[in-house]
Picture 1 (tube, rainbow, N blue to C red):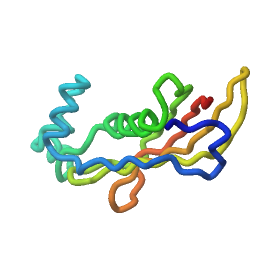
Picture 2 (picture 1 turned 180 degrees about the horizontal axis):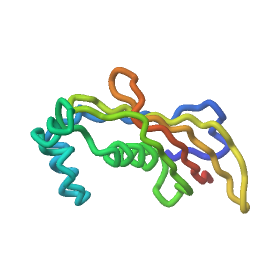
Picture 3 (picture 1 turned 135 degrees about the horizontal axis):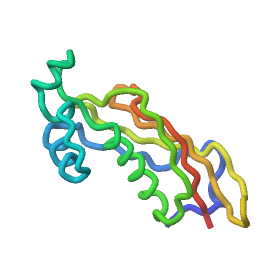
Length: 138
């Protein structure tokens, strides 16, 4: 059952999304799907030349997980806006955890909407992405 405007209150948490730990296969598959073949994400020698211990996940991979968080909660056509900022690097072995909290209820243009605060952290609670979304609810 999808949420309704009357069933949601400020402070409510939407169902969280836990993702398996990021590994090299995850990165290779994302490269193919996104067309982003930046070597910093797939070539350990390149990463080490850049003074990094290893490759790391694309920021947009975590952004996609936050998109999935929203579309597991409501149909995609109800998403009115999504804005994100990158706040940390997702390393190999990090297990993304995506959460959302209702921070505002409002009506605009005759439509009932909620504003969500979004976060993507790793299994240690270290933030990797933060942002907001606006979703229309019946």
